Image (cartoon, rainbow, N blue to C red; front, top):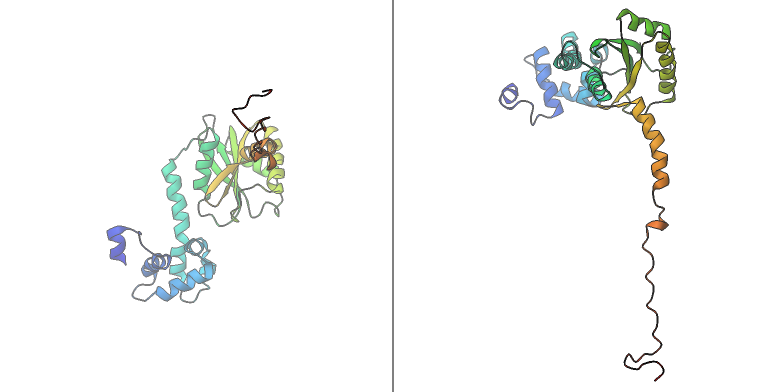
Length: 252
């Protein structure tokens, strides 16, 4: 299996084979095929296994501390490499760049987290500060603490960003309330909020994009022709001629 990887990468590998290859380096000289299948059955997918915390991995019989640490190391390593590709000071000056940065920021993150991405006057990222960890609906928001984190970084502006591990990109009512609350708090110290990015299932949407869509969608629906209007009008029958004989003139 190692030779397969060295010759052609992971092309053609099944999820359990990828796990086998990883587990080999933590549990050498042992058939780890059954353990790979057990892990997939427990956590549902390869992504689920690699996103699981070490304490949960260790609950699977046959997974010791070394194997749990190795598997749990994979997702943070992927995020580290993605951030490295962006450079030490990635720049965010528009929504597209904000979404690219946040896509790398949240890649593989298992828990819901609200970040405050602090930017300097040129839009360079100073630091992405994890402000809240957990479900926003259930955790109290402390604007003073969040704004204080941006002030400590001497932020000129900020981007709010959080992920939905559920995979649903649409903002919740709590997301909208939190954004309004933090917008007012940052405005009080003259730090503009560029936008609020929501990451889910490998993709991002900003709150302003979502709000714009909500405004446009009803207008689009009103302008759509109704089902009855889309039907072709019935063809009218040709008018009957006064004389059936085309060669006979009227009045003759």
